[in-house]
Length: 302
Image 1 (cartoon, rainbow, N blue to C red):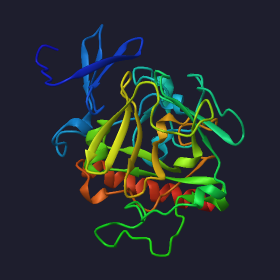
Image 2 (cartoon, rainbow, N blue to C red):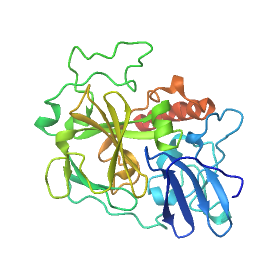
Image 3 (tube, rainbow, N blue to C red):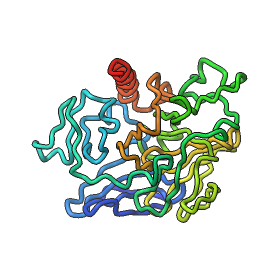
């Protein structure tokens, strides 16, 4: 512990009985976690300036708490554990049904309303199903669907690309851009694209980004990210170019099916957003391949 020196405004949050998370109080980036008893430190790889040849993804832990396997379904070639790797009986083999040893958080507040919250639950809001107003806005194409290095982002045909599954779900995807990596502290950030009109405070009032401990960080001119100032959870990303469409951090969705919230989201499996800019290229290449394979398997199973 004495060899770790962190400059700047660092806040701490006990996200488990035996684990403390440290994050930047200015931009919310997760930096490292500390197990107080063993004094073991875990660095958040997204906050590192270099990872190739230094960091390698070796396994998944706490998969049971996802209820549906989470990202593990997209990286099947790695060992996975229901909880800690120290418990061999908790090893999860491909195709195994995920357990519920860790109780699921709350589900939806109703069939057409999905409750969302950060880890400390200071930030809480609801998402509603797509409706007529969900399409009453315009947005350029995201890199997730139209790679910026190959295509122009303007959406001249005004395609409502964020509405999926016959108007019942929202598009979701993974991102590996430097902004998301450095803003979250992790190499992979999962976003759901939700119209602002479908995001409400728990009081029923429209979202105005004035939620309890919510803090805003200006990434660049006209681009913003919000995070919880108490637990450090990434919450929103939005920009002036498309003010009526908000990126919601998928980890906050308390869906009954599990972490991927597939009853609300349709995941894009064609690519990882900004995968060409990924710092941990080997990881993102595996993720991109795993997503495509998962998409093929889901299509084959109907």
